[in-house]
Length: 270
Image 1 (cartoon, one colour):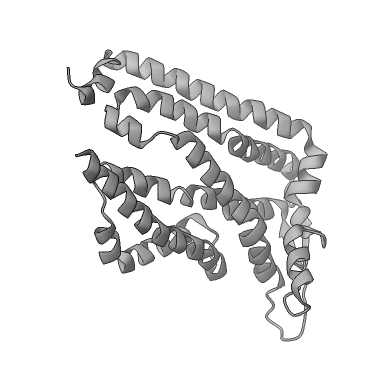
Image 2 (cartoon, helix red, strand yellow):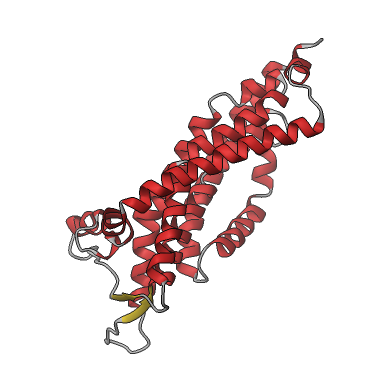
């Protein structure tokens, strides 16, 4: 038995046994979302006052930071009047927020369950290449979510909320609670997912599938693809797409460097 085949042979099992094992990984992952979701649901007032509606307060960290720089860069919350439009909206929005915050909080455990299912089927060199994947992916996910919450969301809400059709006239928008929460979700979770790009690039480069030269050659194509992805996963406005697209483009350039280092390790192991 070769070293590379050891990782697969040690975990050989019938197909339906694999399905049964996958089922339990999924059950545990979903259960973690439910546990954190229930915690969020119980602390309703704290969650909505200090997280969901915090962007509508003057003392939100992003506003205070830019106001501390100069009067010219000082911004405040969008001029929004957030109201529940439909009967039962507060309750169902409460459930939705609990689910998504539960998903965010349990992401490391969810990824760990996925990793536990995938790892036994990898070759030894692939397991070595993906060492520390749970920590790195979780860190980048949280970094992306925080970037979306503290950078994309404030500017996105400010632009969309204060946009007016009448010059020199501020019209207060009445926004549904559902719309507000949907936008906040789209500002944050997709950013966390897109921040996984360096990990994906490293893995593909480490096993010889992706090269830095390929990424440089198709840089323009990647730009179009990133903007298209940003358009799909974000609300339909150019500002939000740009706010998400710019950091992802920076990550793409950083991924070229990461791919170069991973490729060097790949050839070294050969």
